[in-house]
Image 1 (cartoon, rainbow, N blue to C red):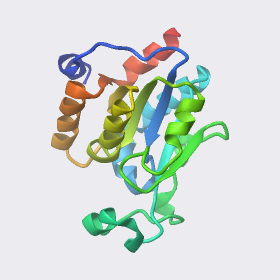
Image 2: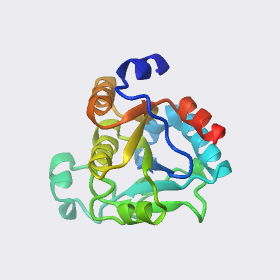
Image 3: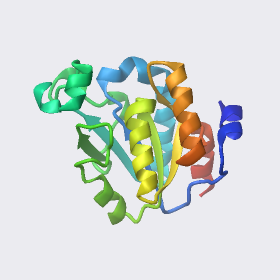
Length: 194
């Protein structure tokens, strides 16, 4: 993965100390099968962030009902319903009281949430994105972050989706016009250098 990241990256930027936040998207029971292969890497990111006092934001996707979900309900039919076991964030993440959890109901973590306000409060300039699904919520949020003038860093092996082709397509698109790709190991090394 590191070689692919080097090939695809348009810019070789690194996240900056004191202005970086980690945004982990939809690490919920519903997506456990997609998350488990990368979960140890994400756990190491979470641990390093806590050791370095780097803000962690988790999103939690959910709907009251399929009817209330608008186009997502019409498109997918099968949705994450709030309060159901599949809506829970993975316990392996050991979410702490100082972590921020953003409730969302669209692909974009900025849409109708207080994510932008939380980033402004902390004077965040660099946003590191991981989670699921690479080509839906992660990509949509990364694109919106870019147009809001954040430097976006996308965890190439810390995001996952149902098909490798979709994952690779997102990495190519984002690295071309929206984000710098990083592996989880590269980002941890950066954090430890601060």
